[in-house]
Image (cartoon, rainbow, N blue to C red; front, side, top):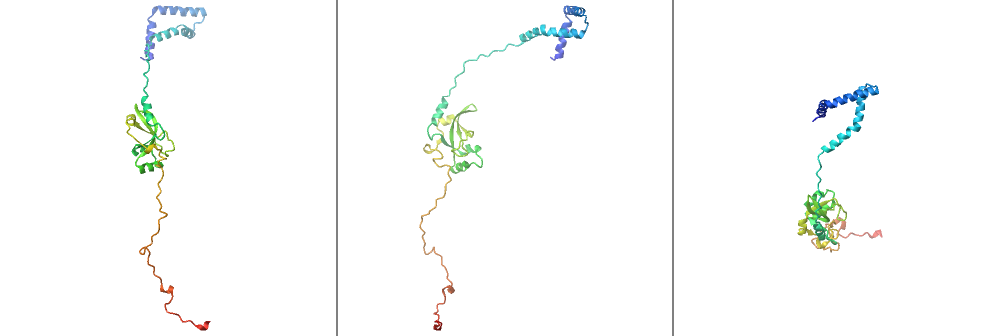
Length: 232
């Protein structure tokens, strides 16, 4: 309902109240005579001023009474959260060298960039290695988070995480690094150099030595040259 319609409804109700109109008219006449000021504008201003003090609070009370009562929601005791699974999961990765596991390379590929050196090591090994970061809730599912250290196993990158379901972890469906060692201890991120055989003896056989032709002019004439004794 628009304000114009509501205003018109009030006008209709006030206009139909003869008792009010009679008293209101008598009041207006009395005010004009006693003040000696028959100004309608000032009379309306005076009525407005008095209405703010005397009538407005009445409308405020009615407005509050007309508001629907708010239904208070009773807060019951919160159900305690069972975090036992977190402690159980952490226990699997507690201890030195127990945090690193192998995962398929395709499970970390979305976190790798072309200039990440570890990508070369992952591809060479045919698998990737990630470090346990802790229990997490992802999509309302219990998960174990693992950190993919794209800058090398010794450089933490806590925002690079992959997730494995908690149930799989607790079922032991993962492969830990050999002997519980770290990638650095296993030298998984070192470039292998080809071995050089420095001490191997050189075996020269008759077949391995090439034939060399010597020009006869370099060896001189086979015939004996006569010596001129007069030169001495």
